[in-house]
Image (cartoon, rainbow, N blue to C red; front, side, top):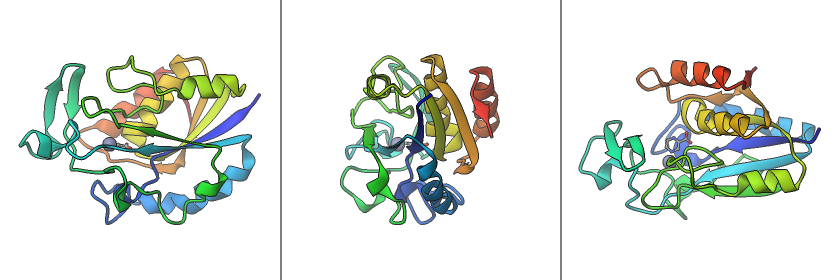
Length: 197
Ligand code: VGL
Ligand code: ZN
């Protein structure tokens, strides 16, 4: 077994004071740093949107947290966040990014959002992470980070569907919890065979 820690989107915009702040988002950083030594590999994801991204409410003259129908399905419209090169897109200053073997960016395609670390929201365009994991012989993943009900959830479910053995350490995650999203995510992960701890 080769076991990687997959750290999802621990970025300033998802922490208190950020553009899409997740309550308690900064509380998990010390625990994630401490966990890194227990794994064969550490991989970070970074939400990385161009200005004017199609997932931004401001691009549709709509209210943040409203819904829109995209060619690939329904999409939540978010406040502008994690814009490439900004402080909001940077990792939390205390996160030990020097320990990462790989940093994978997602959400850079202006027309498609990407919650999952494996596929964009069209569910078909790969990010390349699967190939990286397989060529390194990584077969087991533990996910931590932000947000439990969006990027952690989508990444965990895709990883399980791809045949990886997947667990989510919920103590080292925090949720947006919008409109029932956390309850839906929890049952979706369980149905996909993700172990929740
Ligand atoms: C995320 C909403 C929009 C996340 C990213 O990291 O969970 N959520 N972009
Ligand atoms: Zn995003």
